[in-house]
Image (cartoon, rainbow, N blue to C red):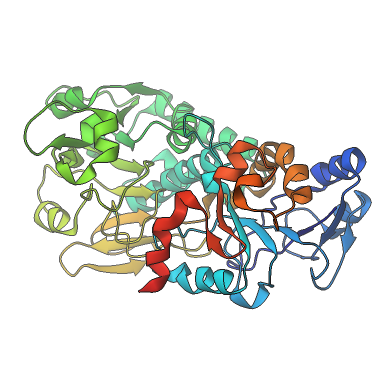
Length: 433
């Protein structure tokens, strides 16, 4: 009946918590759980709030058998036969987390991954995705203002700040609305009109990004309409947005009809077709899950061959998906909140931190929800709370088939006593290489 809340130490700017003081108080009152926590000065919720909720501050989480976190856990923190729940970023065989996974196997740990908590339709139940979209769009509009100013073009976007510099999401939204009113009243400079924002994907991340964009005077158009938009008189008093679904991004190599499930099951049989749209966009918000067996959406070669063409308008890429060298090949790595943007030079293929220099500006913060730490933690904990008691009281010493866990949680169990569970047997090859 003891659980632990660990600190988030992968990033200096990480301020989220998997369990808030408010949720902890309810769990203690309802289930009689003992909740221990590691004190942390940077966490958005002060230590005093956890103590007031009935939690116990400790120097080490040696007593709880179940420990909740958010980001990856250092190898030195792991203990034998304990249960850990966090975003492990291991299911694709991510090389940077394989030493951690190997250690968990050796220590016979249980690993639960939030990313794999899904319902019968394979929809994720515990996620920060919408907040990544919200923060990512705010950051990208802020970055657009910096980039335009660097080029000598003044826009209302120069009034914006990076997301974490606002005291709340509502304050950030108010700033975006103010930008929208300026555009309605005064219009956008001729040099950047029409201003088009493209969104890859239509899930929670994309919805969050669109929620911010929709605070501006914006009209949705189809991918087909995008291709002819710039041949028509520009409306300086609004923006345009385009949502790209999988059928807009890929096609069968043999020329057959696009079938979504077939695409998911056979990504290598499809080729990317997104490049036809890229030159027409001003801002690209990459919000879609990318299978590393699929072709990239934006390649370095395409950027190198296109970026000096006068008909190439792409200025900012908000890579919320943030797969290093992945769907946006020029995203060489995720960026920290303290240094969130860089300019990628397509010819030298080198990034330059900040918003200055020749090339395309890329925002690729890989912990975007932490720029809205309070709001995102509450929503996340709301989704996690119903499962905590069952996880805390599960007897993990029993065989996998006999574990008393809710179906979505059992589906998220990657390691059971150090062994890969049936759905994740394929991951054995990742640590055997």
